[in-house]
Image (tube, rainbow, N blue to C red; front, top):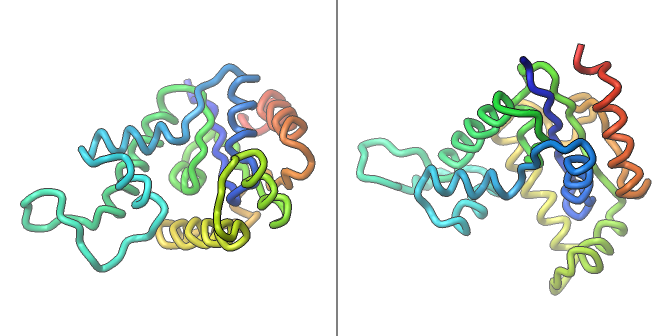
Length: 197
């Protein structure tokens, strides 16, 4: 039996993770986000903070040696490869929603994947980061832009697609429509079965 998967890629502060959690609860399916990073950390036997940092940055020429082997991939490449392996494992195991920037690409050859991109105007994202996420930054606008730049750079480095290119998604949606409303819309799309044929 083929599993039904939803992948969510999102701009920072767009509320994509909040939407994903609501969809997972409504559909009673598994939700994976930071769990992916934690599992990657366990598999690589590295502390989670190092993994979180590496999962946001593309590889550099600096090879971070994790063991004494003759040839070791940079840590960023190891993190991407391990996360890709975990994502594929999850997609084969159960119906689920995966919030991961590269999941839509990693599962591009898999059937029954609903690929979603969540975005919002910069002003809305700044407000959400400050009010809903309760994050404090010296300059929230610059921080949000920096996080988007990191996501774009990472995605474009590790995939053959272009981050935020609408043709790589089944649904691109502005979260200013409302977190609950978008969650309900995704649930309806998931349930109508047209993408699962």
